[in-house]
Image (cartoon, rainbow, N blue to C red; front, side, top):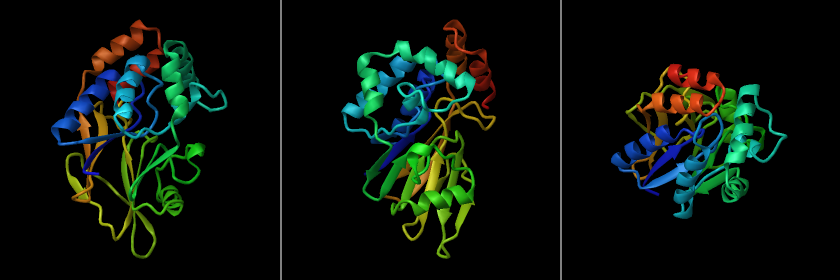
Length: 247
């Protein structure tokens, strides 16, 4: 388990995905993991899934996100724009791609590391980890030293100190953060395909298992091309606006 690139919330944004994969490879990543919400919002669901399925066939872990589940489960609650994008996505997937989404687990363990889309506490509830209380509940639900999640479209880091209280830490992109095994950690790695922190650059994280450190990265990509596809393929214009403003 050397250097693991952790990519979440790709949301059918092929340009952002390829940019992050290339960047992670240059950073020395030799393992890739996908933390859910592979589809939804963006204009390239089939091509995005094909790319990720190739990684999965080579052993890369992939977990289920709420948008992935919404493709085949009408009980998943989404806002109207997100719902419209899912309805647009469904007929554009092959039977094999749909079966792949249906096969995805809610969690995946790699030694002392847990991968999940939302929270380790009831992963199927799709809880957002934005505050210390939510991070604490996630930490209490697993014995893993390191938990990596997505879902919130922001890069956040929380840790449990020796007093068992959970604290937040603000990561700086490009700066490695030591993750001591004497503490327990939960991080949200940001969104590859739809960042929401007023920064248009794609987001992912790289975990160095040997050094016990994580680095959060931001990667510029050709979001103008993605926006053109959104408009030309009849997806809601609001999805294009979000990419152009990083929100």
